[in-house]
Image (cartoon, rainbow, N blue to C red; front, side):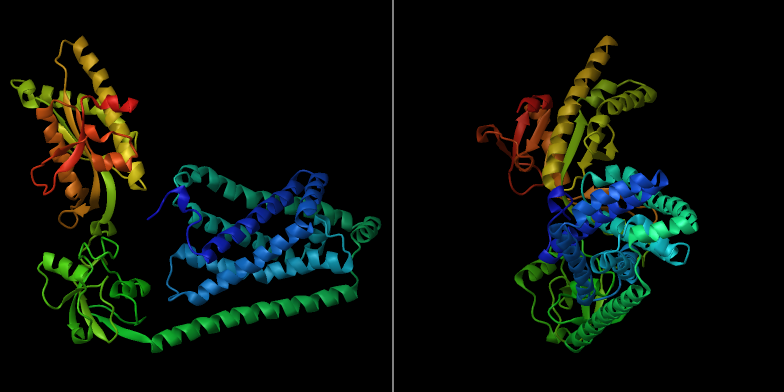
Length: 556
């Protein structure tokens, strides 16, 4: 999953158009709502900002942009509904779609009695005219509801777009405050200005002035606008009906060109031919384990084909190799690789649906992350003859001194192992994780130097450490008996980091960092400083950089 800011505009052209048009409309709504809120203070402020907004939004180019954004955003929203394989979706997505479909019901009325009235009948559609038009009928409540619907719909869309960026989570508490403030401010402005202007409108003399100032539409004009409103609403319902018809038509077509899949101890579904079994499961909301994301490596998506296996194409080279590695039977296939074209019945070997009281985290997640293995040198000799209390006290002081260097870089101590620890740096991408691991190693070196100065003042011997730092594929998940499983990491990267740490002792260095991590972190290190290391339990030599003191990397 990409979580960097570079991913903001990734996706197909329709996604980029939907985001771009949505942003245009959101910015317009934001300033429109702030404008309404100024009625809370003074009419002059409200009308002054409205005049400024109109100078921008009613310029020909800006008007074209706004209406184009509205048409594009609405059209793409309906198209996305047509193209959905299923209406099953998260609650937030369903809420956003429902709110989006409710917007035109009131927005059409608003546009016709403001912009349309201004252009066709030369109505002065200031805020006062709009409020008098609605006050005190149910229209004021319907337009207030429109304000809330538009704002919530936009905020959900903004959150779904930006939630994977680095900065969004940090600023979210403040943004929630703004999100609550804006509609409250606008509604308070409407109520305040509405009460004031309606009191004026009750005066016969002032009412005549208002009618003249706003060039109030005639009865014939209102009747014509109501007809336009009815026609526009008919067009909207026709578009919505066409969308539903297209969606149902596509669903029926897929069903006629689909394959039946029966899950043992599970449902029976129909899915489009050409999809992998894993994609069929996901499209129909069927829980199906897949740690590697469907790459054919982890084999956790494997199924036993109970019926229909004769009609399946033979396994590809990748699938055959992975199945052979786990000693799978002839009936076993990988759901991420097989593409059924005839009815099949399958049994999922691994169940991620809570069947065994497992949380979602128990299924694990494959990531490429930096791992740091750290160990204290000469701990056994140093603590020989000491009381257990003194040993524990020393270890806690040591960890108190160095662990903040890990956590400050976003690292997490996965486990403590006596006088050592294993830490992982869970970052959005390998580059950030590798850089965080290097910075943590450098800060640990500085923290240890400061801690040793403190020990010297107590006439205690210095502490030396060894660190192994590597970047590789890991699986993060809960491991242990159901109900007693702890979150941990497993993978070859952990073994490599541990073996690199062990090599620091005979070399007399503080840190061994793999070339793979240095490359990911974009560190400029000359090749002659990199040495190959034959590590126990690792089939191939691992190129790594020996560093006498990790703090020396700060100058690199």
